[in-house]
Length: 224
Image: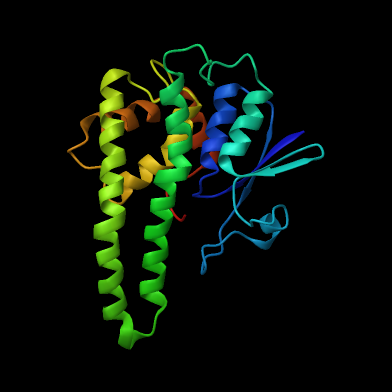
């Protein structure tokens, strides 16, 4: 039996959405974060050496990492149209956003999150200096790269309404977390109308709404 081990407010929402889009038969096991550390509970960490979500178990298979799980599930549902075929004109953009979601956008989001953690954990007396240094790093490194990625996304979404073409694909599912994080952190503002319109569209997708109902939360964003 396929089981999604789902951590509240985490990247595993993408896998939940994917399973709903696939109409897959699965069991959902939800874990709550520690109220003080916001980390995954020990029970979830036992499943994967990464100690993070998402994680799926399927008979003898235990698999972590969002992109790996997406590929695994799509391999087991070859009839699905969520994977753009190699002969499609949308294949290249699909591949780009599938991998940019984790390789580029989420790495920047994680870097920013680490900066914030460092600011609050360093001794009080040196906190202003550390904050100034990390803010400069954010302005010179993270912000320009996020702007570049969002400009590419804005241009792509003028060509077609989704990251894989004219309909929702796994690329959109992969992109939901970094795009929602960008919105939450004020990178995705009024200068990106197509990106904001995309967020509105995917929020109305039946699979997304079903996943949100099962997740039981009002936001897919919290900690990275």
